[in-house]
Every structure is written in C-alpha cells, then in structure tokens.
Amino acid sequence: MTPRSLPAVFRIVLPALLLAGAALASLDSARAAAPASGVDYVEIPGGAPFQPAPGKIEVAEAFSYLCHHCADFEPLFAAWTRKQPADVRVIHVPAGLSSAAVPYARAYYTAESLGVVDRTHAGLFDALHERHSLPKQNASPAEIAVYFAEHGVPEARFIAAMGSAEVDAKLEQSRQFLMRSGVDATPTLIVNGKYRIRGRSYDDILRIADQLIARERAAHP
Image (cartoon, rainbow, N blue to C red; front, top):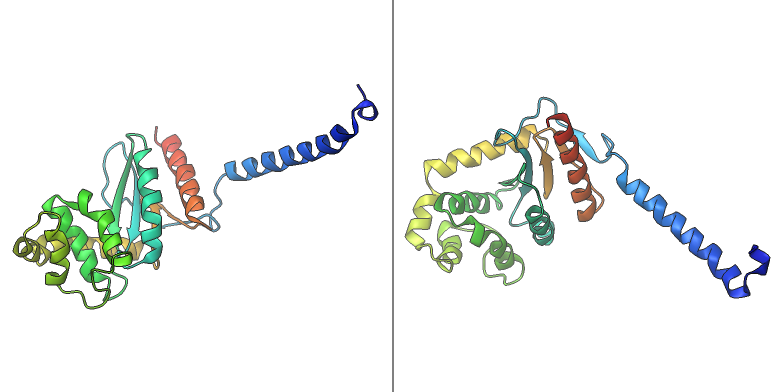
C-alpha cells in the first residue's frame, strides 16, 4: 500500500507518530550517553572513598539538614538507595558549611553513634522544613535533643554523646573529606571518592551516579 492509498487521517497521523518516535529515540540516546568530565562530573585528583570497603563502590552524599534542596532530594535519594545492588555502599556525609549547619552535622554523627540514625534521619528534615519544630540558627544540643527524645533517646544521653570525642573525630573526618573533594554546596554526590557529580536536576544527578557506578564496576570487576 503506498502513502497515497492510505486514508487521509493516516497520511496525517503517521508522519507525526514517526517524528515522535524519532524524538523519543534521540532522547533515550542522549540519556544513555556516557557522562562527560567537566560537564556531568568533576574528577577529584587523588580522590579516595570516605570509608573504603573491599568490593564496594561508595556513593557519598554530602548533605546538610538545613538545606531545603537536601530535604527535597532526600525521598528520591532514599528510594534510589533501596534499589542499589549489594556492591554499592551509600553513606551520608553531613556538611558543616556554615556555623548554623555544624550542630546538625554533629547531630547526625551523634545519632549514628547511638544507633538511631535510620529512624531519625528523614524525620529531622521534616522537623526543620515542614513542622518548623527545631531552630535553624544557633541550635543548642538541648534543643536538638528534644527531637531525639521523641525517638526514644534520653535527652541527657544525647547531649553527652553530642559532645563526645568520637563525634568530634567523625566531624573532622567529614570536613577533611569534603574539603579535598571540593564540595561547596549540598546536596552533592561523590562516587568512590573520584567523581563529584554535577547535575541539572535531581533525576539527572541520579542518572549520572548510575553511569559512574557502572564505570567503576567495569573497571574493577
């Protein structure tokens, strides 16, 4: 059957469908393109994972509880994390990029040391950005401890842990890692300590992370 013998409606619709299919194919091709250095990511000279583990590809998220972009990114990143295979290790690295952010960075490591971070992490974003039940400036250990008391951690225990040498050491370790990785904004993903991801959207950041993980997996099977 020639194009002239097709019913008129098909002579109109068919070219449009072909153009739409071509556009989708072009979009899929662009998405599948290898990430470009200097555009999609920055190579970190001499970079190394924050917490090296044999056989693991590390994805470190530099974040701040005070950052509303981090709060928006959190549910997407959590869903992405749950889908990762066993060879991918996702860790959170709290960034104290301002004096206001430091107490909450300490709070993350305090929760980690007390074994409650899994049940308090997402909710702390909510307390700050949705419920506004925590101060965003000059937060004291006692004020932050109220939130953790809601999750079963006695206030005195939390305050003591927040001022511990263990938390001091973790905070300094994270500061050094973020500084040598060139992190100056949050959220930022760093793959295996080698690649600091750039992205035009949250979905774009996760797409680039997937591609860099695949690169690392291929390089070190």
